[in-house]
Image (cartoon, rainbow, N blue to C red; front, side, top):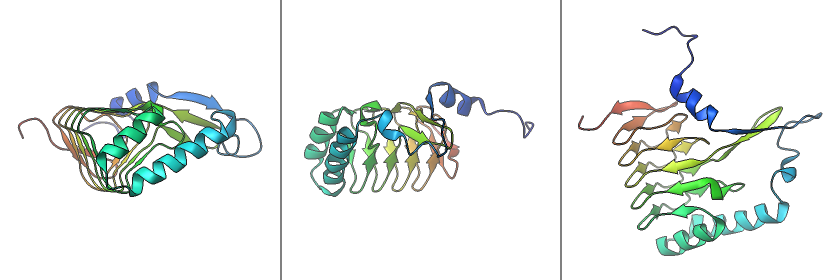
Length: 176
């Protein structure tokens, strides 16, 4: 049994991969967001992602998201209402034949009180992300990994591992 104050090395690795931008001032970091990403770019991203969320065409979704800078492998399936990051979609890589489930969210940013953080999200080949799951910035989901529905992924998921819960924890791995 580990000490409750002992840091989680997997979560630390995610945090080590995040870029931090200080946002001093009287308000939280969401107010100065246009300093980090242009308003017009975010508006275009939002409209394109909105179309992708409601379109049943996987081919159209993959093509449109590729135009925004998402690295989309062959045969990727985005479920209805799934949402890639609106601010930094170019920081998302999804491997071939991966599935992003209904209403799943891939975030590449975190707005906090005194800073915002950005990080890449990498989804491996044939990985599956369940409906309503949320993946935080800096997380890598390995090939053939599975994220259960409504899970919150705060640390890397090794290849072939199934995770579930809030926060997501392994429930099986490899041949289990």
